[in-house]
Image 1: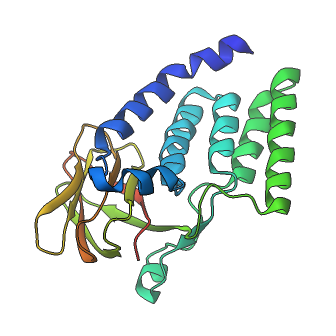
Image 2 (image 1 turned 45 degrees about the vertical axis):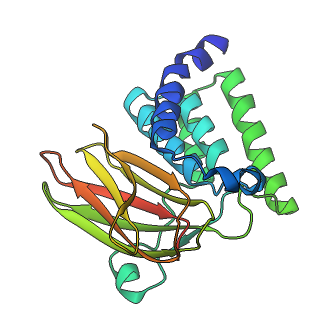
Length: 232
């Protein structure tokens, strides 16, 4: 079992490093408030998406279990508008139950893995009964979109000044997606530009109001992606 866990360390390290590079620090005066904030669960979904992809490519039951643990207890809400709902944003992107079903399928009589899956299922049920959640006051909002090669998807979201804002994109692995966030005055507030289709940005808006968000497909192929946000 220890060898199986160690085999997944590199993917955790790489994903966490990418998230750290994308994260902007809070202004000095906001350090106390930042320390008191709870994570929204958006980062959990980005990590879980990477783990599910790894699990699918390598038929890893353990990766499915770890992904289920990450998203268990995180509340997600679909896009609220009728147009977004019609576009397909109605099904939660990752379900702990479905992830653990896949884990059981691949465990194939492995007693250690089956015990780990059983513990994860029990923990999820206990968390649900107690109302425990990784988020404080607002659920993670998500949308589903697709973009042809060279296409840009745009979103308009409002954030409160001085409070940590989070946006993430999780692609299907077929292309390269970049994330840009523009403040109400048009200046660049945050971005995540790398060679993957997973993006995450965290920043502290200097001003409230509508922010323009762009997801650019800079790769050679079309891509479907989930869009997560703490904004309104």
